[in-house]
Image 1: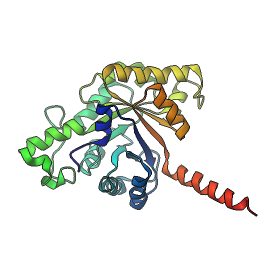
Image 2: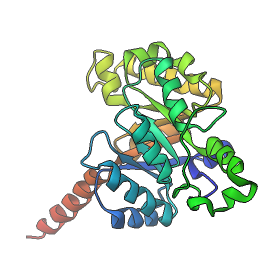
Image 3: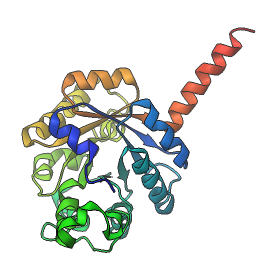
Length: 261
């Protein structure tokens, strides 16, 4: 794995950062995405057919292409967390979080001692013990991994919104990922993203992250929405899902071709 983390580096330097979700089981698609100007991809274990084994292959392909890599896991599971981080993922997005205690458990699995209790083995993360991360030995690698591994709870539940500041204060939490769809459901206004309650909740999360000096990532469905969230002050946006982008692009091409008939 690279010693740097482009997502963290861009946040620290105040540069905008753009990613997307991948639901395609295709390393080739991820290598191609590097040609688009994207900074990172999110390998999705929650809402896609991707399993842990395929996810590890996708993380490797994205890293090799020079893209940042996050994995959205589907549970706070020690085994799943270890496998994704050992594969070289730069961080984890964790859905359906409600309490700070859940986040502390997450940190304990994702961070090495003394911050957590992540299990150790020479793996792809750290070049199986041969990367520059090991210039100062095993302890040097562990410190590097703790610094660059992003633990990002997803704020999409009433519980997370209620305990937001407490969750952000947990040592080892890098920031928050906003899931607007489930958040709107939790607020009782499914899909009403222009509702004042949803707008206020999103801004509250953004501001709480900014006040804590931590990352905030907003998911959005289009480039226009992403531009609006950048103007609002978000440092990072995740735009769309690759399979939907494929459909939209191919459909536009087909519609244009058929217009000539």
